[in-house]
Length: 256
Length: 256
DNA sequence: CCATCTTTGTGCACGCGTTCACAAAGACAT
DNA sequence: ATGTCTTTGTGAACGCGTGCACAAAGATGG
Image 1 (cartoon, each protein chain N blue to C red):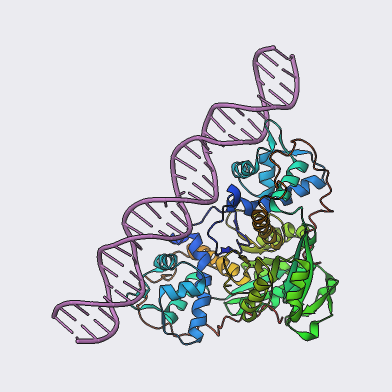
Image 2: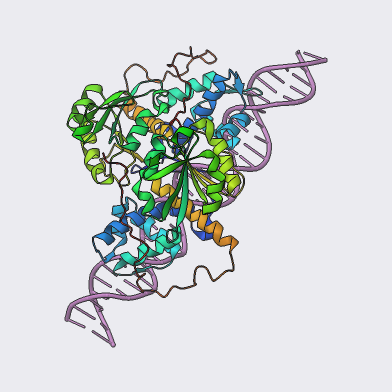
């Protein structure tokens, strides 16, 4: 997985397990596709295959929402789409602000999946005065100074941070102070937020590193007996002769 | 968290738990920051705070790698940076191809965090012939026709898919057929891959939906007794009068 | 060399999530 | 109405991940 929840143990809201909540959007997407093809009903087996999960898991997930299936038949597609949408809160309109309009911010602003799910881009915000007024995805970029006003006027409760790592915490603090209680963070930093604020993070670099780990393992298994990969005991305490290339955790996601 | 592993149960490679692997990049980032400030050693408590995790968890994570700490003192920063880098396979060079150079693909190509961690963008690939030759992040975009040749010539084993959902599976199949065994997928689709291929997905829309769920719950708890939120038993079997807005799962991440 | 103090490494228990496997429910045919 | 057949919903077992709490290790000072 690309991210993970930060802070806030495992909320277990109203009895619906966190793991189940994370899968509901997946089911919703599969169901929407079926709905478009005018498929009236679907069995747990079919739907599970489409969503890429185990059918028993899917049935248990749905059981947390209620008894929405019909034994011997399956689930009514339209009805289930509605129930899941309602459960996820997608039947209402969620204004969202995106802070940091670089490459990634622009990609997010253009992302079609937002509007189609009840999310509305209320504003694009960037610290660069030169960006102000310039339209991205048909929406004019506004300067950071307007942040508080926008959030309060539009009743925004969800913010997306797509700034460089250095600016993220500061932006986060301002968002929270202005009333935002849910944050999606693309900057490679750990955000500190007060109790009651949800943070989810998406970190491209971390995802790649996890893939690299498994890739290395695969390669290592093939060449099992080559030249003693992983020497038994790398002489402790010797410094690694820091020459693994010029690192430096350059966070630069984009010049926001 | 923004994504989750797909297929492949919980590999448990060489005894290192998957959950631990997912946190190693986090520790590495915190350690790199300390290294830059020339901090020689760090305690589990300090490092855990910097990485945003529990100190006991951190110590247990490190114990899977070996006994790299010194009781009464803490961990040697440089040494730990090296050990984690090696464990994650970041001491070697990983050529990566990015397929689908729209807004997101361009954002990824410009992402500094890649190069700084041993990842090298070997090629940018797009299906639009008009893009061919045009430089993005200093690298000329190549046409999809070149895909197989590039992968084989450069020995690429990691591919990033940033195309629209409709093209993702097809691109995936070609990547796998050409020899790629790890895929980072940004397209909102479930990818089918053969045994032995790792897929990680990052889905912006899913992240927002999860946030919306919690946001709705928070709002619902405040207005606890308003107008009977969540009616006890919504008359079963009645169709939801499909007017939740013009949905359609528009996947369009970018025009690749 | 001994005592004290700090911090690691880990045994243990607990809880969440997953999966199996089956009984109950209902559709459908006769 | 009755029987058969399909598919749901869930009880129960299991395994992974987390966090507590403490013993062992080693540094440091006298």
